[in-house]
Image 1 (cartoon, one colour):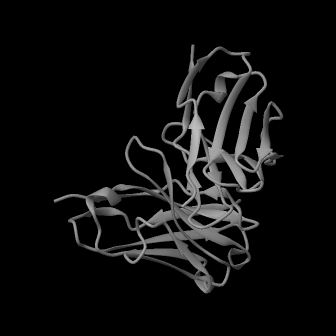
Image 2 (cartoon, helix red, strand yellow):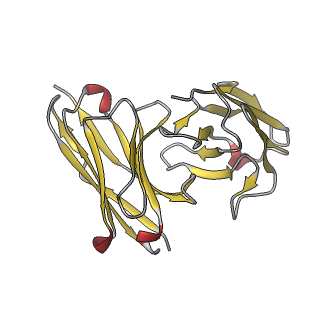
Image 3 (tube, helix red, strand yellow):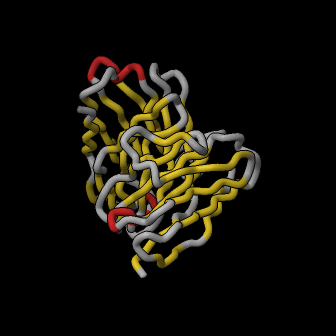
Length: 107
Length: 118
């Protein structure tokens, strides 16, 4: 199975900060990489699919980049509603696998 | 409006079985692949199983292979997960999700809780 490793596992940031979360795959997954946001008690919500495509309705402060094994999710200016846990997911091969998550907390 | 509503969760003992259902509405069900994703209490997301639009192609996580079976009834707009030989480590909130282009999940249900405990 393909292992997905996110870093950091958690971070503290302030409103307005630029935040970057990285995700590394244990083997090349081309651009089959998605990013989800999950708030407590809620279902996950897709932000970015195919590494860099912004899901409809998602604010443009979210962006994704990368291909092969190394990927990045960037929030250009953190907003209060962005405090949540973020997960990457590979869908290159079954079984699809998620990273362990990155919790973004208020500094 | 796309809606996915899971049901069938509950408390069972190790070794017992449970069948989860997911009722879909607001979209043409048989145009989409579907998945089950679970989340143990306080833990991260784990993809469990997926099925293509017509039920011919399925896939499973190693942790459930041979014990869980995914299926669908397009006439009833429903997705299912038959879970046999349940283990304590299967305790989780189980979400069904619609898969877009077969490569990401764009709509999720709120989940149904499965608790396996002796």
